[in-house]
Each structure stands twice: as structure tokens, then as C-alpha cells.
Image (cartoon, rainbow, N blue to C red; front, side, top):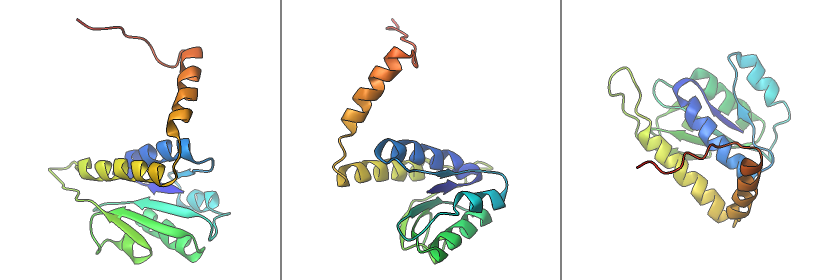
Length: 154
């Protein structure tokens, strides 16, 4: 399971997209209704892992989901900015990345780099031959015209 709400939603989506290439059962939790999130987690148990992503201002929905996952015995991992983050209260593991608020916009450059590193580390740890997956995807993409060939720009 992967969750990131509001400005963290793109990070969660990016992480879930690549984890889905390595695992068959990745669930990106996303909804505007908090009760629906719990409905998506109804079968969660101690064999599951949840990765929660939140930075200041911390999403209360993400914090509640992490608590629910912990109560269900799932392995809880937080991607956040500090050990003082409310996500760390229930997380077994916390991966920390600085997130600066430059103005009204959050800078998620460091968290995205951390997510990239996590994806690569999981792939290497599993000894997943991701190149086989991408070879198959390249065939599918070519057959169904998923991408346009832009040619060379001169």
C-alpha cells in the first residue's frame, strides 16, 4: 500500500507506478473521502507493508491511515521530513528528506530523490530483473502505439 495526500499525491503515484512493475499487488490509496480509504484497506494484515508520504503541513488522513495499518499489524514505513513528524509515531522505519517551503509551494525535490533511491534499492534487493519487464513493455508499447516517435530534432 502507498499513500500520499494533497501535494504528496504525485510522489505516492510515482512510487506506486514503479513498485507495480516489480510487485503484483501494489495498491495506491487515493480518494477524497477518508472512509473510502479504510474500505480499500479492509484486507490489510501483518503480511502487508504501507508506505506513507507526508511533509509539513502533515495530512491528518495519512497519519490516521498509518495508525490503522499499524493496528492491523502491517509493516509501516514513513517518508517524511523529520523524526518529529506525526508519521513517525507508528512507523517502524522512517526515511527522511528535507522539504522546504519556498513560498506557497512545497519543494519536493529531495523527497522525489529519496523515492527514486528507494525504487532502485528495492529492485536491487529483490534481484528483480526489471529489464525483462521493460523489454516486454517496450513490445506492448510499440504494438499498441503508446508512444509517438518524435524523430530527431535538429
